[in-house]
Amino acid sequence: MSMKHIGIISVLILFSCSTDTEPITVVEQEGPPKPNVNPGIFSITDVSFEGKSAIIDWEDVIDADGDQIYYKLYVDNVLMGEYTESIANVQLQYNTNYMARVIATDKKGGTVETSFEFDSPKSKILFYSEFNGMLTAFDLYTQKALWTERTSYIETHTIYENLIYSGINGINGLDILTGKWYIQVHQVFIIMLNIEILL
Image 1 (cartoon, rainbow, N blue to C red):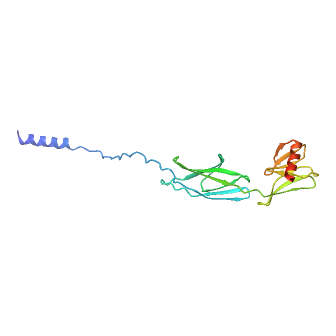
Image 2 (image 1 turned 60 degrees about the horizontal axis):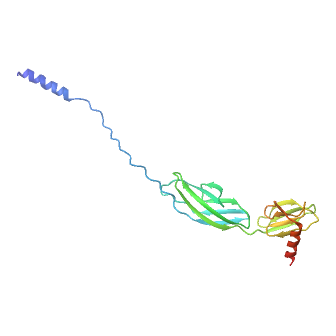
Image 3 (image 1 turned 180 degrees about the vertical axis):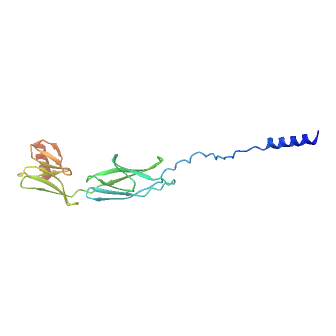
């Protein structure tokens, strides 16, 4: 083979081996998502009252994932409100034992719950009747009227348990906390009740 042919073969081999290569992109495969951690446990720090207004305070909940925490307050299984801070102000009744719970939830749905029990204050109510027969229940805690209802201006009133009795349209009882006309009772029962109180 001549030197000329050897040179041509060498050139062909060089041309066939020199090709442009694309850059290689390395994709890192993500692992399985990190499982959510439920919010940390917490406790109620204080329940205080101003009249019938209850201020319920609890510890800030710590979430290991750093998620925002949302709170729901239930009192006697009634949702009182949803909160982003660890405090609530709700209106309740006097003379009542309450069962309550606070549920803390993070943005991924993890929850933690704390249950507690408390008593509202005993009512301190002054009743007075005006010359026109309007009966008023005056809250001595808040220094405000709880309610006003029309009764007879010539009657005196008897209180028994949670009712104050009036003689408007028969013998009726008004709830001492709300002024709602509660029951209509038989006159003989009221007479017996009055005798029992006097004794």
